Length: 140
Image (cartoon, rainbow, N blue to C red; front, side, top):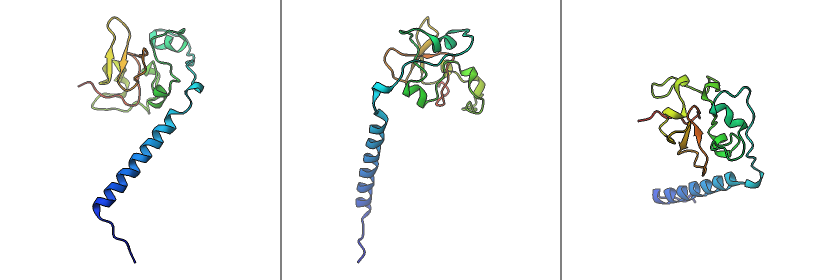
């Protein structure tokens, strides 16, 4: 004998399944934070704050490139060094012209060459105005 399911039952079961999957995904992302390194990789010939960030001493205002939030967004301090295949044209703006400074999620810290990013909410850490990530969105 076949069981019949009502639409209401299917919606309830689907929402429970989706909620459980979301919680499991969140739990998997949190992991052991003691193993996360805060040392940023070095770059050659630093010329400005975007390049210096990778070799900056402790207390630097810029987020480390190996921070999980930054890595997940493929964030870099110097957007001009990103593979052009990643920097696709978005909202009528050429990939080569996309930087944190003209992104919708960026808010400049007055008098500094960096600012905060809504998508990288790490306390006391910022992104370079010449930085870039895959979630770049045109300022509106």
